Image 1: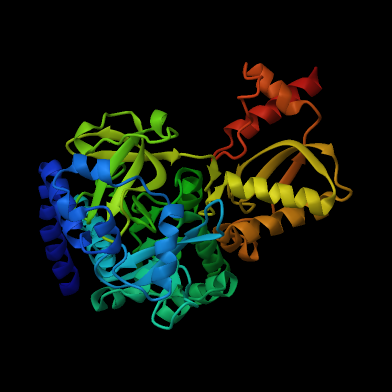
Image 2 (image 1 turned 90 degrees about the horizontal axis):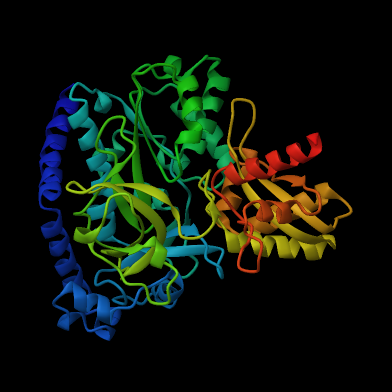
Amino acid sequence: MALNSVFSWFMKKRFHQIELFTTYPIEVQNEVFEKLLFMGKNTEFGKAHGFDRLKAQSSFRENVPLQTYEDLKPYVKRLQEGEQNLLWSTPINWFAKSSGTTSDKSKFIPVSREALEDCHYKAGKDLLAMYNHNHPDNKVYTGKSLVLGGSSQLNEFRKDSYYGDLSAIIINNLPFWVELKRVPDREIALMDKWEPKIEKMALSVKDEDVTNIAGVPSWTLVLMKRILEITGKENIRQVWPNLELYMHGGVSFEPYQKQFERLIPDDKIQYYESYNASEGYFGIQDRAGAHDMLLMLDYGIFYEFIPLENAHDDNPETICLKDVEIGKNYEMVISTNGGLWRYRLGDTVIFTSVFPFRIKVSGRTKHFINAFGEELIIDNAEQAIMHTNEICNCTIQDFTAGPVYMSETQQGAHEWLIEFDKHPENMQHFTEVLDRELKKLNSDYEAKRTGDLSLQMPIIKVVPPGTFYNWLKKKGKLGGQHKVPRLSNNRLLLEEILGDLVDIQEK
C-alpha cells in the first residue's frame, strides 16, 4: 500500500503539468519548436536547411520541405552504418521497426534517448496519471503490469545498434521502478517467435496479481484465451481478481470490445486508449469512457496539419495547431526529438475539441487494412496479387479486401472478393501463394500471421463476372477516374457488394 501511495503522489504531480499545457497549448508548442530547432541546427540536416537562421514557424515551413520515409531513408542507412549527427544531435543507436513502404518490407525509424525519455516513457506515466486522477481510489500499483511487447533483434549493421518493435525497444530501456512491477520477464517479453512466446507468457503470468495490461487487442485476446485454457477458469476475473485497467492502442478497439467484456465480465475494468506509433506518442484518453484523446503537446513533438482535401496536392500547405477546426479531417505532420523533420505520418485525425485539443484517429491517407496491427497498404496488396497471378497462371479482373474480425469461435482474417478473368487451377494453392507473397512484402502482416494466432489464412470469395462493374454503375462511378477501393479497414464495402450478389441471386 505504501508503494501505491507514492505512485499516486507522483502521478498527481505530473497531472498538474498536463493541466499546464492544456491551459497554454500554443505557448507550449512554440517552446517545443524553438528547442527542436536548437537541437537540430548543427546536424547535417539542420545545416542544409539553415536551422540557425529560421526564427519563425512560417520560415520553417518555407525552407524545410515535407518529408516522407523515402526522403528519410538515405539518412537512416547512414545512421545504421554508424554515422551520427545527421538528423539529431545526440546518438541514435535504436531503430523502431515498422511496416514498410512501397519499396521496402519494413521501415526503420530512428529513436533517440530524448524520444524514449521525453516522449514514450513520459506518455506511459501520463496515461497512468490521467487514470489516477479519474479514479483516485485505484489500486493499480499494488499488483503487476502485464506488457505485451514485440521482439528485439541485433541490427546487422553494427554491434552497438539495435532494431525491433517499438514496444520491445521501450522494454529494453525501461527504468528500474517500472521493471519492478512489469511481467513477464524480459527474456520472455522479447522472444521473436510469437507462438512459443504466447505459451511461455501465459504460463509465466497466470499466477501473478495482474492489475493492469498494456497491449494490442488482438494479441491480448490470444493470450487471455490461452490462459483460460491452461487454468480451466471461465473468465479472466477468476484468474486476476484485481485487474482494473486495460490500456490499448494501435488499432480500433471497437471490434474487440464485446470479446473483452465476455472474458472480463464486470464493469470494474476500465479501458483507456492511447495513440502511439514508432514515430512518437501523440494522444492519450484523458476521460473515463471517452472516445477521443488529449493531444499531448509537451513530448518534444511539433505538430502541423494538412487539410485532407489537400493531402494529395503536389506541395500541400500546412496549418499549425491554433488554426485547426473541430470536425475536419487532417493529415498529421510532425517534427520530433528523434530527428524527424516535417515528417508526413500518413495518419489522419479529427479534432473533437479545441482548448483542450482532443482528437480521434480517423484513418490513413491511403487505403489500408489495420484491424490486427498488420498495416497492410495498397501497394502490398497489388504487388502480392501480381506475383500470385504469375505463379498461378491466372488473371484477376478486379478485387477488394477487408477484415474479418475475431469472434468467440474463429480467429481474424482478411476476406478477399476477387473477380477472375482467368481462374487458377487450384484455389487452395492460389490462397497459399497470395498469403506467402503478402508475408514477403509486409513484415507486420508476416508477424500477425505467425501460428494463425490472431490472423488466419486469407479467405477468398470468387465473385461472378461483372460484379465490380455493377457496383460502380450502381454508385454512378463508371469511368476511368473511378476505381473499386482495393483495401478497406472495415467491412462496409464487402458487405455491400456481397449484399448486391444476394439480391441478384434472389431475383
